[in-house]
Length: 94
Image 1: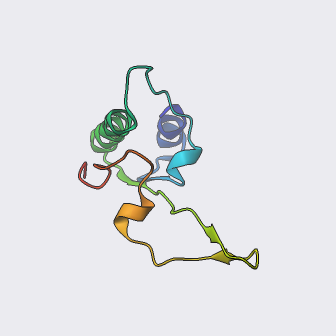
Image 2 (image 1 turned 90 degrees about the horizontal axis):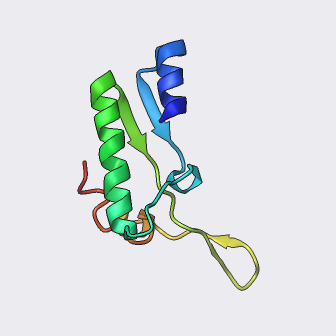
């Protein structure tokens, strides 16, 4: 959030893209489940975007499968496969 705010103030950004979600530093509380943490983090991002008039996008990429030949296999992605573990409400927060 600090880097996004800095970019907003310095460069006047209008779009915030977090890509990929799993590469940002997360501050999950010890008592929080994955789902509870993801919900809290998404609410903070949504509030930040609305407060500053930003279009905010969070991308979560599905994992790649490796075939017997060692090459990456790409499956047709569905929304549920692109969600981080424990994030049953990732899409419902929007």
